[in-house]
Length: 214
Image (cartoon, helix red, strand yellow):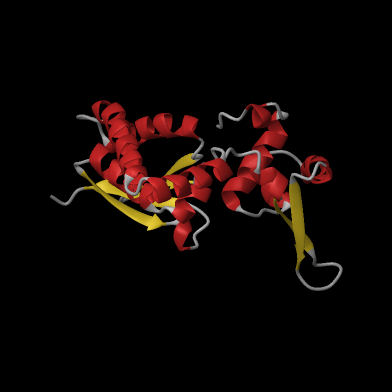
């Protein structure tokens, strides 16, 4: 699921709640109970604990005392359970490189893209799309992108629910271009299209992967 030892130390149900809220953004106690196949009462106990620990917050929606319900989401403390790759240090390093050695950061990003492609490409050759996407998940999950796959009948979507270097890419978006280029290079016989991008306001980054028309 993640490679974060702090998150992995949580009891299973609470860990699942945290990951669901990270992916969905918000959910009610009833939503969470349905997804985890436990009672709403049990979910509320877990949410009460997570709220008390400062990891989860909520907002009330609806009109009137009998209709209001709580939508839960991760607090700033809960978001910190998902590694951001030493965000502040990375941003300062990027700024320093841009000032002292213009172009060096771009060179570094390109080198990382090339290394990823060299590792991933051999695992894709001659394999069906579903297997290729599974291999990508295996490669990306340890990097804390929180990747997930969905099928729509015509194509496969690959969604990253977390960006471990978001602070850096907000300042230097070349890393995002390298990410898209890496996927296209790793899957040269597929049509790769970015369909959601956090830098454009989406809550996630997502790609559509389909059989190439050519």
